[in-house]
Structure formats: C-alpha cells, structure tokens
Image 1 (cartoon, rainbow, N blue to C red):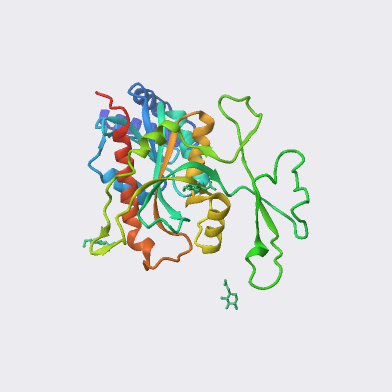
Image 2 (image 1 turned 60 degrees about the vertical axis):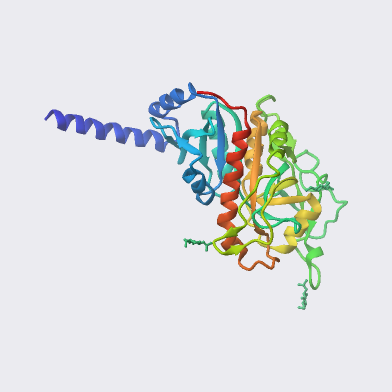
Length: 343
Ligand SMILES: *[C@@H]1O[C@H](CO)[C@@H](O)[C@H](O)[C@H]1NC(C)=O
Ligand SMILES: *[C@@H]1O[C@H](CO)[C@@H](O)[C@H](O)[C@H]1NC(C)=O
Ligand SMILES: *[C@@H]1O[C@H](CO)[C@@H](O)[C@H](O)[C@H]1NC(C)=O
C-alpha cells in the first residue's frame, strides 16, 4: 500500500511537471537545477546547429560530461554540462534556421552564467579560392534575409515603403532580379537588404537600434589566429581533397533562413558582401550575443561551394562529415587556447 501511494505520488508529480513545462515556464525543478549548475559557472556556451555537427563533439574524447548532472532539458532543448580542456561548457543544439538559433541562444544566455559563446558547424562556401573542408572564422556576421521587396515599376530613386519612418533603408543596397534574367524583364524587381532591429541589454527597453554587420569578439579573433597552422585530415577513407584543409580568418559570413544551392546568388553574396561562409544560424547567434553584450566567435567549416561548380563530384555528401569533424576539431583547439582554469 505504501509503495502504491508513493507510486501514485510520483505519477501525479510527473504529470504536474509535464503540464508546467508544456506551458513554457521554467518549472521549480528546472529552476533549482539551473541555480545549482550556475554556482559552478561561469561556462562557455557551445552552440551547434544540428545533430550532424553536435554528434562528433559529443563523441570526441575532448568532451567530458559532468557526471552528476550531465544535462538539463528545457523548452525542447537539451543543455549539456561538461568540460572541454579544463573549461566548463554548456553545449546546446539549436535546430535549423534563424528562429531556432535565436531562441536557443537567448535561452542559453538567459538561463546560464556564461563568459562567452562559441558557435560552430558547417557552411556553404562563396569563395572559389577556398576548398571543401577549410575552416573559416569570419570577422563579421550579418543576417542577409531581412528584406524590403520593392513593388514592380519602382526604381532605385523611389523611397521604399515605410522608409520614412526608419523601418527600412536603402543604405545597404539591393539584389535586382532582372540582372539575373536570361530573356526579358522580371516582375520581381528588387529586394533591399535591411539591418536588424535590436534592443541591447544596455539600451532603453522598446527603443530600437539597428545593426547589419556584427563584429565577433576581438580577443577571441586574436586567439583564433593562432589556429591558422592547424593540421587537418585531407582524406575520407581513400578519397582525398586536392590539398590539406586549412583554418582561415575570413572577412564575412552571412546567414538567413534560406538554403543557398544556387551559384548566381552565391556569386552575388560574394560580390556584394564579401561573404565566405553562407549558412542559416550564425548571425542569429551573433545578434543575441551582441545585444546581451557577451563575447562570441563563429567557427564554420566549408562543406561545399554553394550552388555547385567544383570538380569534386558529390562533394557535400562525401566531405560533409569531414567538414563537420573539422569544425569540431578546431572548436576543441580553440577552447584549449583559452586561459586554463584549474579545478
Ligand atoms: C541562357 O539561355 C540560353 C538559351 O536557353 C542558354 O543556352 C544559356 O546557357 C543560358 N545562359 C545561362 C547563363 O544560363
Ligand atoms: C574581402 O575579404 C578578404 C578576406 O576574406 C579581404 O582580404 C579583403 O580585403 C576583403 N575585401 C573587401 C572589399 O572588404
Ligand atoms: C568510410 O569508411 C567507413 C568504414 O568502412 C564507412 O562506414 C564510411 O561510410 C566511409 N565514409 C565515406 C564518406 O565513404
């Protein structure tokens, strides 16, 4: 009978727990776990986009999970605790795209005591001088998916809708679809790239500021320069890349919730923005860290030339796993460069 009652209590408590968490608020249980873990902080936040990039980190010998509380699940995300090279880390996977990346990064920085955020993964490449497997660390990130799509017939001298109120601007420039025609005119006219509206923690609530290019943390970038001689594997089984992959600081990365598998748009992103890494989460992580005033850096290994065009056939399939592994290896080396902390 006693066991029955305890069993019943456990069932009732766990139903209560499910209901609380289903509402999205932080349950008292999660809150006390978070408080307990924050006493051990500050941590490095490590943010991966997808399983494809998370799994090689979890499988790496460099990652040692914290045995007595290896993770806290909250809001459909798993926050994993452990160490990489004597640094305490919280690792989280965001899922695909800008909304997932923004939400997950905000949860990470709001729930846990962090000293910085490291984002890593694979990316499409826009620089024909780089190779599959090369690991890029851009100096700046922008969200290239916030647009004002101009009506047909308007030209570059026509004010955009809601431009006068400061919602939109022509300062950053545009993509003109008819430049990509192979026959006659094009009803799609232009899209004008827009800066993101932001509300920094140091600003006045509800008073917007704007940002397009977000710089990564300067001291993280200086440290990353030491990685430029890193040796990375050249072959997957018996298939080898033309040269060993390298780690390289590049000028820019751009992100949008758009999978770019189109050579014309890739070339445009290169010409207009000097972009090298093209992906779907980095700028969201950057936007959150920038507004919360947390240092961050993004490490993205190139998995293919976006839209094709290389002589390595089926390159993303063959070398995608090598690129994911390279991004993990460089992340781990980067963590090793941070000032060691004895425990
Ligand atoms: C433009 O169209 C012509 C005829 O259809 C085709 O031969 C050519 O390859 C096209 N050019 C591009 C850049 O796609
Ligand atoms: C473009 O980026 C490269 C590095 O990737 C840099 O050397 C070059 O100066 C940049 N060009 C412009 C116009 O900013
Ligand atoms: C490499 O070889 C391993 C073991 O034979 C295999 O499981 C894996 O799929 C291969 N990788 C590629 C990309 O062909």
